[in-house]
Amino acid sequence: MRLRFTKMHGAGNDFVMLDATRAPIELSGEQLRRLGDRRFGVGADQILLVEPSRRPDVDFRYRIFNNTGDEVEHCGNGARCFVRFARDKGLTDHDAIRVETMNRVLELKLQPDGRVAVDMQAPVFDHAALPFDASGLTPRIVNGFQLWPLPLRERLAVEVAVLSMGNPHAVQRVDDVATAPVVELGSLIEAHPRFARKVNAGFMQVLSRTQIALRVFERGAGETLACGTGACAAVVAGIRLGWLDGKVDVQTRGGLLTIEWPGGDASVMMTGPAQTVYEGEIDL
Image (cartoon, rainbow, N blue to C red; front, side, top):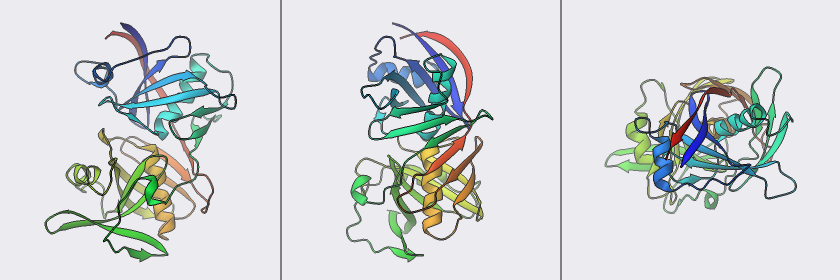
């Protein structure tokens, strides 16, 4: 089959965008892996499928596939690219749209400066939502929030804050993200047996109460240049632990994201860039 696509990125987190609003697109795991392959396909962290809404209260359905072919729950940077794609392709003339993901409804808004704001909804701290098995572990309590010891191998353990932003995250604080062993430790955390569906591993350096640097080893994708849900999870964890204020600039390797969370049951708001790189066709 010949497939038309748009290549986009949000702060360096890159995507293959597919328009399935006019005709359904069904791709096998092999075809998804081919699309995501940087040598034999287009190349991307994830493949995003724009589908018609199945509900009267939302505008579109939003499906997310890792470049391994696995469908996942959520991607914040992809959500920003989604609204830019929908506007550029004439799929909507609204600046604000609602989209349905696997487990959430997101509100996306194109800003006058070209950036996109996403209502990422409230963080979830229930371990069953990740899921995370904490049995037998004793957390360290900081500012009323839990840091969990996570043994990785003999004589090596890290402390992580665990939460869900629609997908699971384990966030640790490091002295310097530039020298942190993100690939080595990230791969161990991602596949840790206490996370039954694996987990995204975040490495956060606190620069001030309003600024952090962040690297994320994403579940099923490895380290990416930016992770929107990871930025949200890191800021929420930092706020709960008493390290950060309610509005934080997150410096990723691919660019700057702004995260806001007033606490409690409030939604997390993420604002950042969304850019088209090129368009093309590929035979699969």
